[in-house]
Length: 130
Image 1 (cartoon, rainbow, N blue to C red):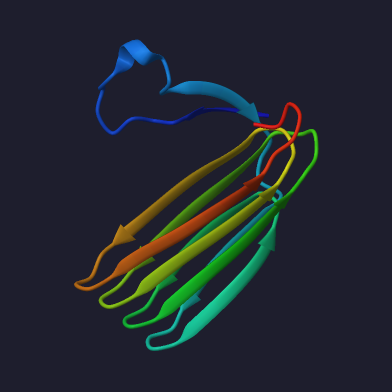
Image 2: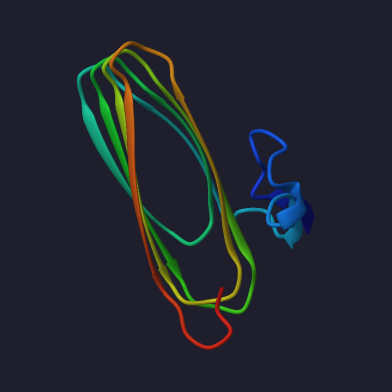
């Protein structure tokens, strides 16, 4: 188990709300993947549950990550780090189908002119899910 801080603020604002910087105990991600998307190509990854992903998206390339996180009692974290070259695009779509705590660290470096990031998330929560 690792102790991580979630909801890290970029600046120390609204500290009186106590909504940022919460410490959470989580296991290591189940999957660990490194990928490089070649210049001018498009790649789609479909992954389940928590993942550790490091990716480099080449010039004018596209990487789409579709992540399905199923229910379960354990806390999960995904740790995603992506670098986008000139004209590159990273798209991240996440569907959470219940379960206990689900946390994500997603760091996208838009390194080149015209690089971009898009994302979407959907949750299906019941009972004590959060």
